[in-house]
Image 1 (cartoon, rainbow, N blue to C red):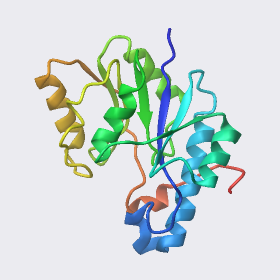
Image 2 (image 1 turned 180 degrees about the horizontal axis):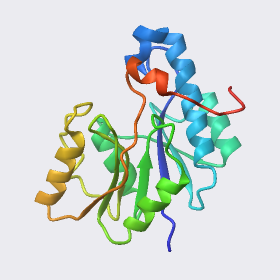
Image 3 (image 1 turned 120 degrees about the vertical axis):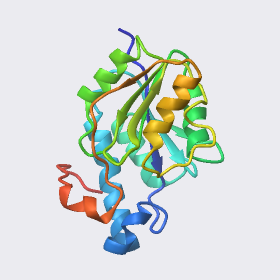
Image 4 (image 1 turned 90 degrees about the horizontal axis):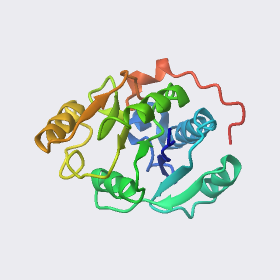
Length: 201
């Protein structure tokens, strides 16, 4: 089976610009430190992926830490492009003919076994998702890029996954949903966090 590329969306680790919903609980510096741990953890969790891995960076890939991580973990750097999250995801997927999987850094439990499930489903379905408990999703993949679930979407809402499925159905495209996972967005999520990374930078 063709192993699709894995696209990891990341931001430059700048205080006040990452994990902003956690700032009331952790402060800007604390939220940024946690983001850096989550980013490293994601790269560790997916290190065994046999397809190519790309780190899609915002606002760009020039931050020194992103470049160090790319070198350490053997991932290729790309810049995110697009006016909002949906178009940035669509544009990234559109760069990879033959299908790709896309994830963020907010799901500590996401690993290669989940990626493998999604990759296998992508051989039979146009779009694949791993839903999140909050109504969104922690992974999206497409056999070929289509804007249906991305254009003019209201993000960070509890019906993002539901709306994505409906839009794909309206476009006549098949959709697979994998197991529901949790992601870390709000202060209430913090007690569930258990990271095992050994080298915090």
